[in-house]
Length: 317
Image (cartoon, rainbow, N blue to C red; front, side, top):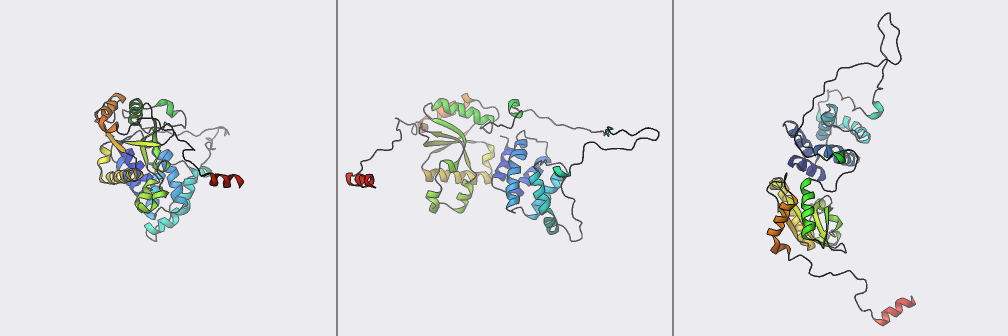
């Protein structure tokens, strides 16, 4: 995933709408247009906006900025429920941000407000008016293109690949070849395999807030689906101070859970192949062999002896 897209997605995962708007507007001032930005604005953003609007956690300046971006067609939002929520909360936010004498803005257009596509127009004098007359307008389309990998099959439906990027898919191939006896799963939420409630006394509020939205790039499990080790794909994006802090939180959570976490960084994240990742795993074979299971340990339900008296009382009950 592109660095800019990763930063915007991280802001949304932390419910940091102000940071998302800052990053989005900064992207508009450059020539960079990541291919992943459409997935973020059309799939992730509407869900986050609806959640924040329902809980009224969007401050006035952010709500006004958001409405202005949508009205100017810079940020495309087509979720009618989100647009209605913004219109309901916009007047109060406008009074906080603007002067008292500033008139209220017009509400954002929703689907119910959309004008009909066909409209009657007055026929020229001497010609009869036709009910099927379609008004004509001149439209100029301006498109910008950049070189990038596009999965055309994914664009024909609302399905998406479980791997967030090509880099993750290539790494998953290498891991499954290196650990053929383990199950490898991409993008697994931490709360699915770390019992946060069990160590609540040892976690700070920052840890609990982070673990709700955090996930690991690749998780290796046994045949019984017990977690063995996690892998993170690092890049230049992870050198930022804010990302370093989140990585430290993830390292601490894995350490508390007793699960090893390895970080892999490729020289060129855009063109790395499975063979390159496999070479990196081979280079770190000494550490990885320590977590490789030496024998199969299936999960059993009756591994202990039960006293006969206790068993008898249970049968009588």
